[in-house]
Image 1 (cartoon, rainbow, N blue to C red):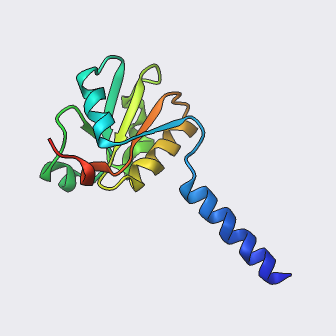
Image 2 (image 1 turned 120 degrees about the vertical axis):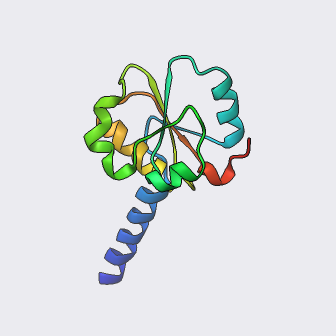
Length: 119
């Protein structure tokens, strides 16, 4: 019985960790390039640390580190799509989920993050 509970918890944890949240679109670096050519009604945020951002970033992305996102979400419009990037895609995935919980309707996560980006 105890083993079943542990197994259930592990399955639940992995499911929550790796299955995309409802309403979050995931794109890759190639799809991001197409988006950047048609910025339209979008806002772009980079949730890496300021040092990571200074080292290399995409010009249209505004730096709002993940640990400040809750305090600074008011800087973003809920009426526009939010495109989120980080180094590998993990922090941006967490940021995307946080933005959905804060009431942002259109949220897009860049899978692979800056590690998959080349200009």
